[in-house]
Length: 59
Image 1: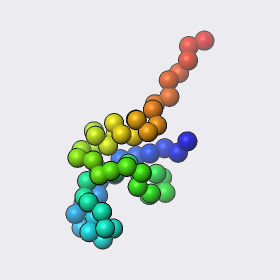
Image 2: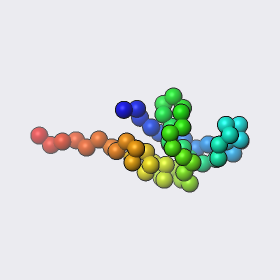
Image 3: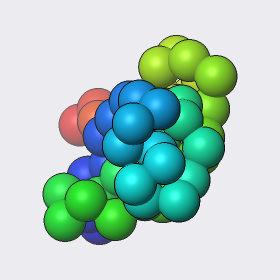
């Protein structure tokens, strides 16, 4: 499983990339996975939906 992280794409970069400005969930390689989202919080919630946090099992 690859870790995802939130990244804000501002207007200048969005125009260059041909996407809307906003928050995106990205792979380590820089590939966009989800977005744009209105806020970093919304983006993090989507990341948690895609890859739920690991739950440690009690022994």
